[in-house]
Image (tube, rainbow, N blue to C red; front, top):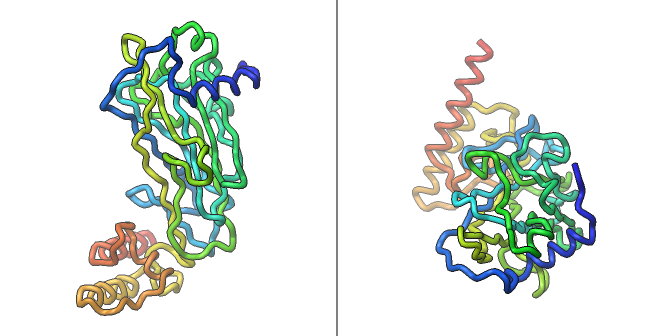
Length: 289
């Protein structure tokens, strides 16, 4: 794949961080794209229906692959600048982002014609990326939208990165998220996209963003009593805890138990979780028999 020289990608990043240059008119838009993550499944993690990643600290993955997506139904983006952060020392953004096409993966985005700039800031545990039009197009005013040969811009990731999980991580809830306002210093770059209309007018906006939740416990999902099985005993324990909470009594579960018991990660330990545990038990029993 052809590479754009470093000085050009640096210049493009600088330009993309500014209000679109004066040769282009500003346009008003009510619409904003959505940026979000997904995590590649592997045998060391569980991905819950809502996208939350569940990690058992007794069977720790070396890292998790996190995909970066944009959903732009208008297909009008010409610059996309995601800024990604993990605020917790136990989850490290361990390397620069990777262009899927660069490593031979199927991708509709032709970054041989576009600038793909990315750096990692280990001090703040942030990734800074930028996808933008070629310098020649920017200078001529002939800006191209983000290229795609797919029906939907979120069919494929823009890029992905690996996040490592420290072996000393404690049971709890963690997140990887897009920076939409400075957190570490007042000049910190934030996530932005620039949209181009049919008349060549551009506006830079902050997209709607969704975070990647990661929950960690010292036991399997649903194995509340930590005996190595997900069974009726765990379902009964969840129902007992639900009864206590419904009666406004003090909860009895420790944090690791609570995370394991909240099987659908909706913030509640209730009958829905108990039913899910019983379904998992029935499925496992059927496989054994």
